[in-house]
Length: 273
Image (cartoon, rainbow, N blue to C red; front, side, top):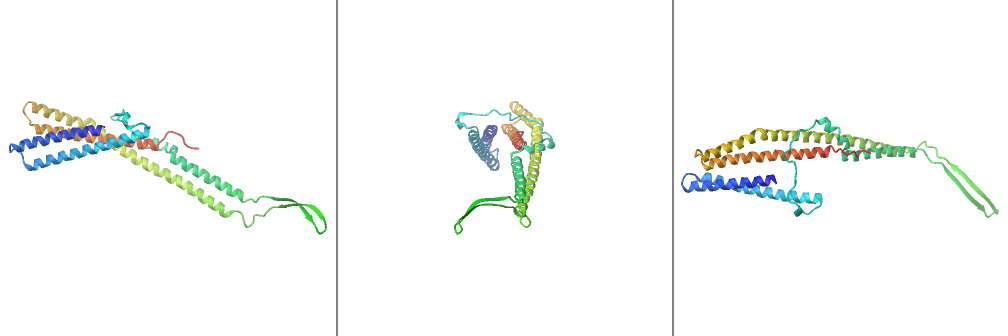
């Protein structure tokens, strides 16, 4: 919503600038090159507005599907978009990776592989076989009971193949879990670095650049009201201010994206078995 509102302001400024250039051109005080630049700037502003509107519709539709309501049932969403908080240390975040759902699934796979090893080792000991039956000899008209027992001696067949396979699967599950954790830690480090960069950029724009651009626009506007500047200079100053504001919104958006990515990787819910 903020990006779309800003795109409307940028389009309005580009439209005013184009009209001012056309007016100066009619009096012979401007050139065709400046007119072409103004028209290209206006076209670019309109393209950005349409793109921002398309992104807004897509995000609203995705949000409505997530919360299970109709897209027309809400106009806006309250979110502390301009609130900035410092990140914690990498060690604090890394200590919570073990509770990530993918790590939990890898742990379950590891435990299942270990149980399979124990099962295959148990199969190495053969079972005792007992035989009980009744036998009739018609030739001699004799009858009797049959009782037998069998206990194989595991000399040549100790289930070595299945045990080796289970151990390989166990080692594979252990290696997969370690590799997955390293990958998530690497991803976490990247998100943390990019998030801190976006945070520092947003704070720098907020405390310095945005304030200076606003003061420059206000001074130019006051000078225009006193007859010191023309309208194009005012539009230029406001255009610069809006460009800096757009950069500020991009930094905020990047910051919140990285916050979400880090929260996904450092889930606080314990999924470990």
